[in-house]
Image (cartoon, rainbow, N blue to C red; front, side, top):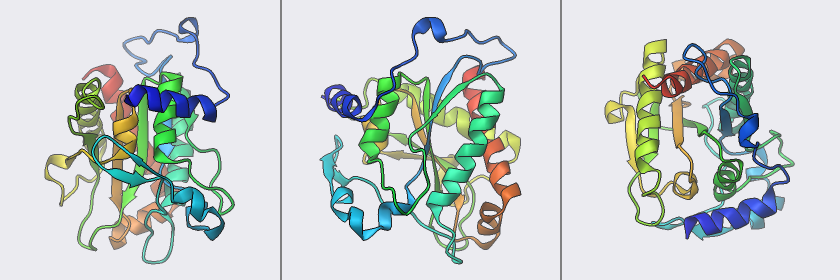
Length: 253
């Protein structure tokens, strides 16, 4: 059922078609990302809080576990720097890093604007399915208590008919992201055990048929991490850490 729903959504949403198999360049051992198709999903959108999009944002769907909404506004630092802008900037930096390593990179949204909304999280997963992406990486930042810090991964729980076809791949991707990011110097979460959260209610994970993971790269309410997230150098560092995680996954380490 999940594949049918997501396929219909994606068919109406996208004009792009999946790259033919002949267009995928096999990767060499020292270039694990070469020829891979990676869909980057910068969480949220500035316009999700715009009242003129309230009706669109009010859409809901059953995600295999519960009924949830289209998307949310995301969080922000105490100084008002929005998660949507942070994830957008990190994703653009990460896109350049991955393309330099031979990957083909697509984005679930192409703007960061108060005059745009969404897409809904199920549509973002539909893009990954339509593209037949090798990986979908959803980039987020948390809004936990001020003493909480560090990154963690969110992978789906087992839901028959929804995630049973990908749950093992998703778990392997999440584990590789955790190991690769930590080895590259990213701060491990001090409030999520082993930097891994298993969720049965995350819509984007449940609708996706390709290896997908959500990474909460840090906590926007922690003063030190908020300062890093708000700076150009910090955004570049987060992108480098995420790239290290993807490299670990595709290298099979």
